Length: 78
Image 1 (cartoon, rainbow, N blue to C red):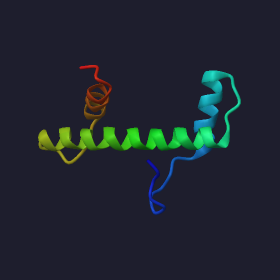
Image 2: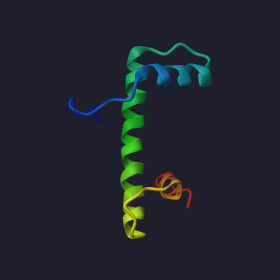
Image 3: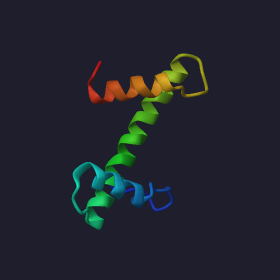
Image 4: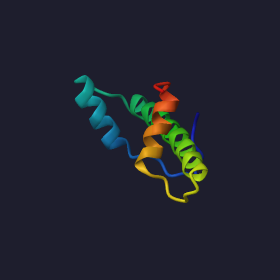
């Protein structure tokens, strides 16, 4: 699940802040890093599926509806 060193990573600060606001708990560095890995994996999965949808529609631009449909499909809400 670890990312390649050449890939850009999501910043930890906003992830940690959101986790704190949501849970009202302290967040360890390893907890923030694991959340970053999971979010990155999820983002890549949604982006790839959204790109497939845009391509199928004959577009080279991913639109909000592609992202939403990809999210729903991946989350099993369709």
